[in-house]
Image 1 (cartoon, rainbow, N blue to C red):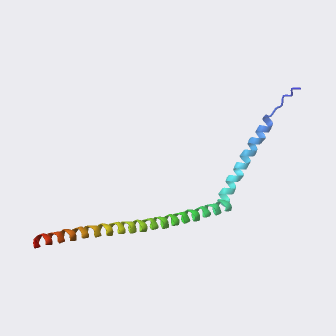
Image 2 (cartoon, rainbow, N blue to C red):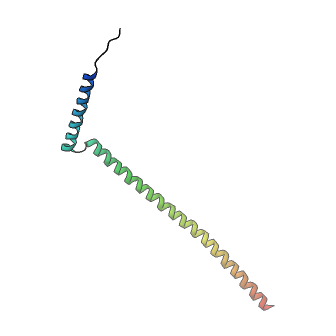
Length: 99
């Protein structure tokens, strides 16, 4: 059995409901501002972002301290090698003068 139905009245009501809901929402936002939950969420996001920044800052600080220590050890070893080479050359020069 084929029954044709007129759905235009239902679509019209649905459109009116959408308009009504939108207007109520806009009015509430204008009068009350943001919802409390959304503001709490935003505050939570700000705290989380600050905590991530602090953790990153601490990690970079540790990285630079470790890099400075590695450079210090490398340079001290390099300095010691150059001083030893200079002393060897000085000793060779003195031995050459004594001969």
